[in-house]
Length: 234
Image 1 (cartoon, rainbow, N blue to C red):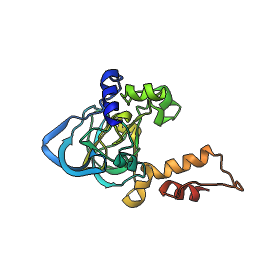
Image 2 (image 1 turned 180 degrees about the vertical axis):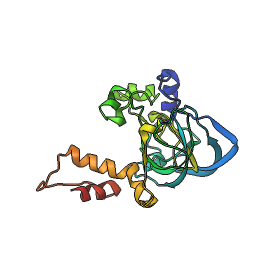
Image 3 (image 1 turned 180 degrees about the horizontal axis):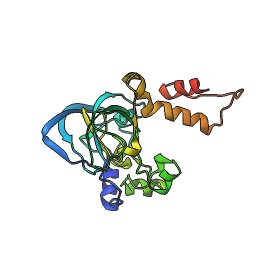
């Protein structure tokens, strides 16, 4: 299936995006990262450190990252269009190491959590705060052909969602930092702030979609991190 997806990707080509999915890298400054090497084959290797690629970027020094339950789809080989050497991870936070000249709301040395999706902030979906549907950051024509629409670009989650290098690494490039970063107060530790990258907003959004109110009887299928947090919101 993955081979077929790569062939289809090559035939279909890509969609023009508002920012490159692949960062510039400095191979003279290596970093450690977890990469996908194949089905049930994850490696801890050295990769070139990412650089500012667009002036709206920041480069983050990772201080906390974690594995999402959905990463199991990558590990098991169930997710299409994984490439050998892809850096994994879409739940991470850290300290801004470098900032592009067009970043207005954040500065070097600031501690931030990063959203798992990559939103441009200016398309019609982003204007409606439907950030995971941003239609300018994911270049995958294959996803568009398969599902009728592309999601936003996602970190470390196959080329079907853009092929952006993820945050299970020492450093990561964050596009559109003013849109996708959240400043973390000094008195909030990493092991709590990290939940803001995916688990807290995803679980809360689920209860909002289900219109959960006081007195509502709720059934939750699956009690992983998202299910457990959804139960707390209820």
